[in-house]
Image 1 (cartoon, rainbow, N blue to C red):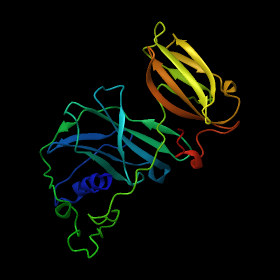
Image 2 (image 1 turned 45 degrees about the horizontal axis):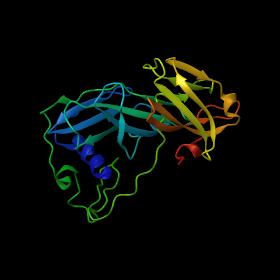
Image 3 (image 1 turned 30 degrees about the vertical axis):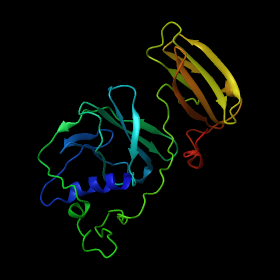
Length: 258
């Protein structure tokens, strides 16, 4: 399905004289075309980008979930098609990660209705050269080869998406940022990568806390469980670099804790 969404998007750039423009990162364009949400952008960061995930939420500032990722994040013209949006009032944003561990989230956007571009439902009608290729593979420069319709898609690859509530700051200390932290609603438990408990904060009453990295005793992966009134709000992980280092090493980017 991810392949189909990706090639479906690419077809928008090859529809005769019709044009489809998009904003340049860190801005994105989100349009509703024929009841399909098209999230698109122009990338001027080049090959420095390692991962791009598309996220969707019914709220503009929280509750975002990752709905997919692009196959070639370094492409200059890129995007994603959401054909199963629950309703037309959803919000969309993009998570961009760079080699070396830096990342950012774009602002969130509502889809804008656009009827100026007609979209075919058949891939063979959308991709130039698809019908004429013996292997059903696009020969258009810059396009990823299209797999046979009978070939199963590759298994999804885990990509680390940092938490917006608990993350590593510029000094490699752990930041807890909870704008709704009042009273004793929130609590958090920290664990090492072998699932051994480290410590717990039972009452988080401040919206912004800094936990010094020395409390975690060593560099590496750790994970946490964040609770809101005793209900699990988020389970995620973070990486504390070695002394003098910053970011997540490329070899650790796709490591997933249980």
